[in-house]
Image 1 (tube, rainbow, N blue to C red):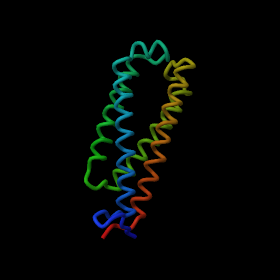
Image 2 (image 1 turned 30 degrees about the vertical axis):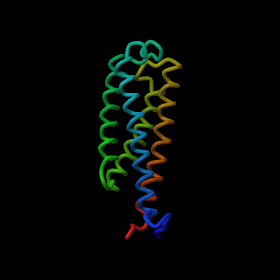
Image 3 (image 1 turned 45 degrees about the horizontal axis):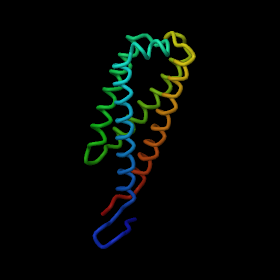
Length: 146
C-alpha cells in the first residue's frame, strides 16, 4: 500500500517502518554513548555512590561505547538489513537480562543505589528492545514501495 500526501510526496508503510527503526537505533546509540562516556569518565565517583568497582564501570563503559558505535553504523545503512536489526534486538535483550542478573547475583558488590542503577538501565534497554522489535516487525511485514 502506498499513499500520497501531496503530488511530490509518496509515503509507504515499509519506508515509514524503516524510518521508525532508524530513529530508535539512533536514539539508542546516542543514549548508550552518553552512558558509556559517563561510566568511563566518572567511574570513581560513580563507584563510591553505587558500590560498582572502578574496573567494572570502565569496562562496562567501553562496552557501551562500542555498542553505540555499532548502533550508529547500523542506523546509517541506506537500507537496514533485517538480520542486523534482529541482532540488535537479541543483544539488547541479553544486555537487559545481564543488568538484572548483575544487580542481584552478588558478583559485583553493589549497594542499594547500585542495584537500582542497574535495574533502571535494564528497564531502559528493555524499552529500546521493544521499540526496535516493533520497528523490525513493521519493516519486514510492510509491502515494499514500488
